[in-house]
Length: 77
View 1 (tube, rainbow, N blue to C red):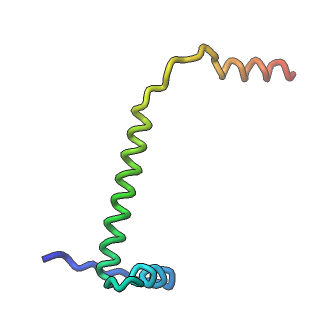
View 2: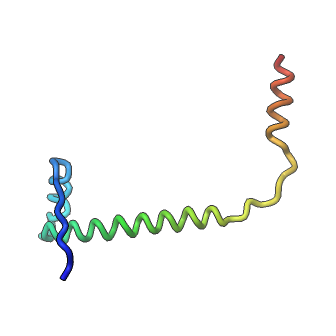
View 3: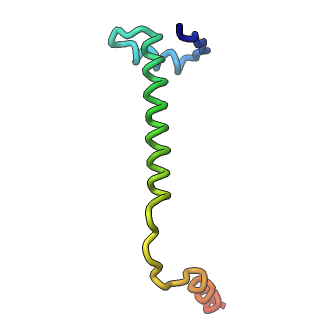
């Protein structure tokens, strides 16, 4: 048997539950579905972040931005 979860709701949560149960779903089913969908979104977002971090940066273009900024600031004086 599954564990029972208790939540404290406020007006915003009650409104969200009203929207989610508008199709006749029970509050329990709506909350369960919302938890599952949120977890899937977070896992997908984490996977996308990992994929971006694994992407090759490409070849350097030979421009040293730090040196360019320093040179430009030196010319301003």
